[in-house]
Length: 270
Image (cartoon, rainbow, N blue to C red; front, side, top):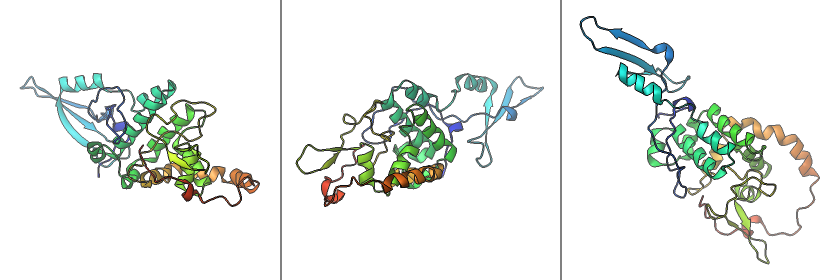
C-alpha cells in the first residue's frame, strides 16, 4: 500500500475520527517535493514550447521515484506555493500551548502518514500503524515532549503503560482519560470528549494526558502506536529506576475490589 513520509505531506487538514473537529486551516492537496538535482530542461530548436521534466520522490527511502511532465510555467507556480515543513503547524500549536489544536493536528498527521486509503476513510486502522516510519513518529513525539517539559508524548505514555503491566484500564486512570466518580464505592468512568479532557499544562495535569488516541474501535490502535519500533527503548530506559521505586511501594489497599469491578462499561469516545 502507498505510504507517505514527512517529506511528502502538504498541510491539508482532514477529520481523524468521529468526534474531533478540524483545525481552522484550508485543505490543500498533497504535494510531491521536487528533487532539485533531477530538474531537466529541454528546448526544441523548431518550437517555442519549453518542456520540463521533474522527478518527484515520496521519501528518501522510497522505491523508484515517480516522474511527471509539466510546463515551465506550471513548475514555477508550484515552486512558489511549496510549504516549508509538514511539522510547522504542529510545532506552532505546541509553541503557543494550544494543545487542543495540537492534538487534532497530530491525528491528521498520522492519517496522512499512513497513506491515501486512510485519508479517504478519515482514520487509521491499527494494522496500518506499521507503515509510519520511526523517524516521523519520533519527530512528532519529540515536539510534544519539548513543548510540555517532558509531560506529554507517545513515549511518555509508553513508559506509563508498561509500568502498569500494559493494562489499559489502569493506564487510562493514570493518564487521566478516566475520572473518579463521587461515590461511596471507588468507581471510574470515561471522560466525555472534548469538554472533560485537560487542554492546558499545569501541575495538576496528569503525565501522559496528551496526545489522545481514538479508542472508539477498541485499544488495538493505541497498542500498535505504543508498541511501534520508534519507542522500543522508552520502557527499557526507565525500567531500572521504576523497578526499585515499585519495590518499596506498600500503598496498595488490602482487600480492595479488582479494578474491573470498579469501572463502568467502556465508552471509548475520544
